[in-house]
Image 1 (cartoon, helix red, strand yellow):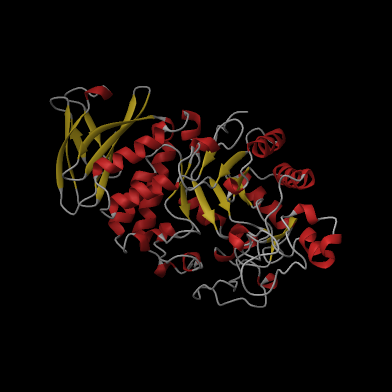
Image 2: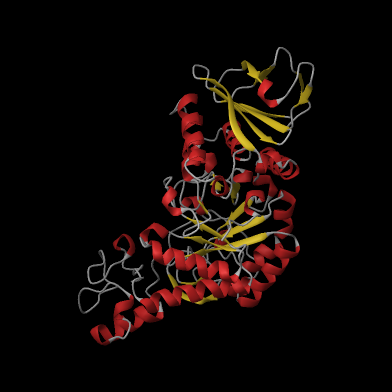
Length: 464
């Protein structure tokens, strides 16, 4: 079973459904906040699937061609990781017709859609857990969970003691995936949504289901429904165990994120950065490297702008590297316009649709990166090779090469302008050749098998 061909060409946009756009007021919950209010753990702001459809032109204008949705199934929370019904769309987001309409709009514009699969645990409202709460040891669903005492207390304050909850949360009872009935239930759900038209699954905390046979069967079920479905695992550290023909196509490459942000925050040197990002490329097979999901932020992290202390040049440089690195770059909704936010729930602010609140220069820059990456297949499919490293001045450069085409990416992670000489003989760039900046109008001439360039502070170049 192969890795989907389309992923290496994908540019993802992650949407937290309650916070992107409110298209239908009638389905707003009672505890809806004003759009743009300070996020809380408990309250909703009314985002829904119709809102995404109504704002789809924004996504197309930005240039993305794939969407990752946080959970969309029935749940009581705004994050929906406590699912009560895996077979229906949360009524606060819409219904199955809305989801199908969204898929139609997306697919007609060549945009793929993957959805969040929360299969390690469910919510307290899940039918089988409700039966356990009602009937205790007499419930036929006792073995669907890890119950160790009666009566089962799922609502009083404190950690879960009578049953196993994810991170001991009473609100998140953990499935017993050793139970064949539970396995079949999960596999049936996975198959159903793929057959309905979803293009893949992003799997929440899959390492919590520490069972290779389970994931091998999960993969078989999903790929049997659609061989080109993308299976993405949320694994926070680099671990080759989780990718391959019996696990996932790719992982959320948080180690890549950590490396570039640590580099820009001056916590590691250019040498340390090079070692980290290059080792990641060596850790997996090529097909899986190019199927990695590359985030700079998500619903689980501080916002990119906040992480980089509001320095827009550093934010641009992070995007510049991300869009030139092997894998599928992903934009967390609003990062392209400079939304700020601390850790959850603050990183889940509502998207501000008033353009006066946007950092439009940043959005234009991200849009430009997306456009160039889509035009230049070398940035999506090319080999990666370091060509320059200056440990003292925190400069780093690499080349992406596909056939006879190359693009050089040079980074200056420092507060001073740098003049550097890049060796380009290996790229086949002969003396006298004129190459240009892909992000501007500057031209460079190869001389003495080198390219002499100037990189502004906290900046970078794409040259080809």
